[in-house]
Image (tube, rainbow, N blue to C red; front, side, top):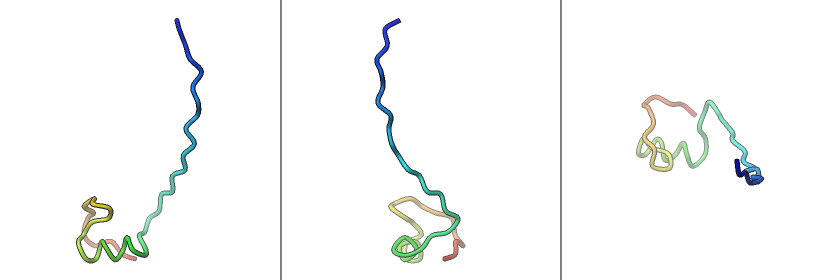
Length: 44
C-alpha cells in the first residue's frame, strides 16, 4: 500500500435556525438565498 500524508482541511460551519440581514431581504424579495430556493414561511 502506498500512502501520502494528507493536510487537514480547516473549515468552520455555522448552522442557524434563522436568517437575518441581507439573506433575509433576499429571501423576502425572491424566496431564495444565494440562488438556493427556500421553503415559504421562514421568519426573521
